[in-house]
Length: 258
Image 1: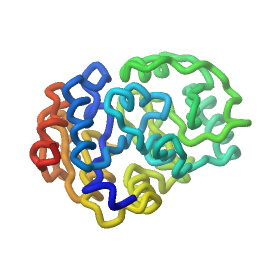
Image 2: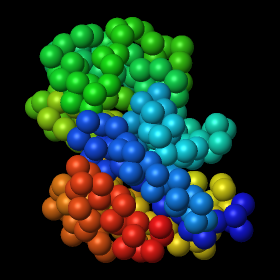
Image 3: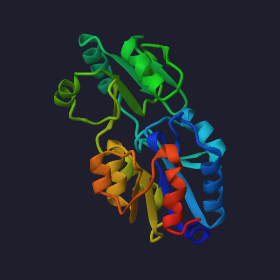
């Protein structure tokens, strides 16, 4: 497969490939199609689930993705890697969330459900323009869970101290992406490159937020949006314009990828 491509380009979604309305603008969609035409493999690298990226894939033609912060990878509709969380560990997390009066969402490869409806749950999903999960408190008992979303504004330290088995990414005021320790956007890139025989190709990464740092520090050419956090900009080779201003296009042009 390596000979098919001149390089690999990884795109975060929220705040990066998606604009302020959480959609891919028409011009960015055209740019990604041109990128592929020019011989590069575009890859979505996101904390979102496969369900939540279908519109972005349709708009860009991207069929390779790293989702759930490196916990589920797929290429041309075929799974490449899954980082499944043990049921017993999830049970203990449910107990703690209940004790703290927090909600918790379960992410499988094709479903999202939560243990209870509350204000943080609604605010978190509303902020990224996605549907509120249905309430199925025992969903984790008979499904393979790849990521948890802890719905809290204040209990970060408690979860981190009680459950060092996880890596936590707070990407907004209402929720924390929670994956099995060792899984990250960087781990997803490593797995994708190894399993698709892409070793040795130049890599590019576009991002803006805290869960993008491992990706930005790993790829050959890190690109950060103008709306990105300071730590991301410090890791950048190039800071492009914002996601509101189609910064993806400017970044691709800067490296002569389109």
